[in-house]
Image (cartoon, rainbow over all chains, first blue to last red):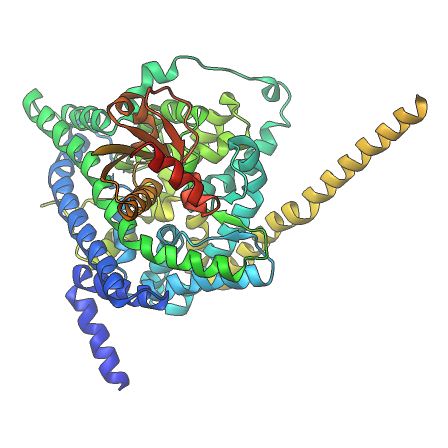
Length: 467
Length: 91
């Protein structure tokens, strides 16, 4: 019996993601109580999305790969790690053979934390589980130990739900959305660096007084927010830097604009396929916890439309490209994920309450961290993608892939590192760091708030007595 | 047939969810509609060509088309009211 199961499993892995995805998603769908027909259609939709993304990545690597290689030869800047975008990495994530275990573990962690009242965030946005799952998948790929892989995703889940809880008051206040928290790692990860940095900036005399307001940024830099134009400019520029003639550079520009416009359409198939599953999970959980006031965990997409966020992102996009060229040791060429810089910066903007000066300082730091983590983990990610049939090696020279998501995110990178390093050292350090954050937000912060409220109350009483 | 533009942060995730809920509800009510998705940043440029704009987040821009906030379709709280409001523009 066991042998039959295992050989079935082997066959499934051997058949590749386009066959495996429909099967696996059907299983997950059935688990959450979908009817077979609906679950299968969800799975098939994901399989189609994967096929589309693989097609596009081949096209992108075939065009952009040689160009970035030519750029290396021509101007001597070594940016051979291609940013293929979070959607492509999510596709790799969902087609991992161990995704079922990870999704169910993350869901179980959420339910257990809700039952034990260690979180108030109900996160049934199954789609965004991919940010937590990829860490486990990469740990599993490196260590070949399934338990370490599940452990890494569980730690990602616990910390993500806590960060969502901790950042909820700030999000409600700044963006004006009550009852919602944002357990989207691609947005909350930045806070891991931004919280300490903001604390520090507030304590440097002089710096804490600067407040710049910028007008007309959207008017002049708005084109950076437009995928088509961004793709055209970047593609053409890379061609020119690589010593291509004008015609070839323009051809590359239009091809890259096409990639940036089409990738999101393929990615949305993943969301569409997973939606019925998310809905079933949401119905079930909301019924289960109907007597309790919970924060509904949503995709951070609901806050990136804020004007301050857009303005900050439009300034950071060109600055991030510049950083990639000047940072020593960086090999990542920012490309497809420049479009989602608003997600990386949204919660920083809320944290500083829209202070542009601080946003740019913190934004540059977090972008640099992403570029380095992306460079360091690119070889593993590239191999992993190869194992599900996304081959990006360009004839004659090795080309690596990475993105601004997965283990490029500071939060995910740290957890990944903790699970693949010397465990006896790294795991205690990780637990210690989590404990510091926990202590600050659950013990210190409520105390200072209470103390402040108490002080204000006392002052009011004194005033009243004086009258 | 009325056309609805659904916008969110990246034009992918939450807008897909909201758009399909609007389509399902319209189908149930027997109203023929078509939805398209985009990023919030693109709404000022595109919005005027549609009969209704539904956003999942804060929208600070200006359009002549009526705009409905669709956050409740994601949280499930106040979902019915929002769907009724949306359909009232599309009949």
